[in-house]
Image: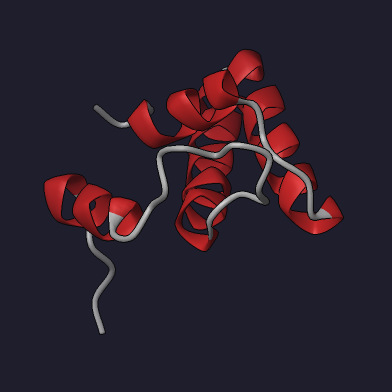
Length: 79
């Protein structure tokens, strides 16, 4: 299967995403997006995005809620 890019990739990453985090652990889609954004942000030298991605990934690993601003940055990074 070929990797998806652009609009198709964003639609799949946001599919089933619960926008109201409300203390729950981050959705799998947001964590998958965080890994993709982390790679791109590292390549571009975007330290703020790298830090946000790490916080989203850490929240998933710890079973805690990621910050809304971090999730917004991750999910909107390629727009």
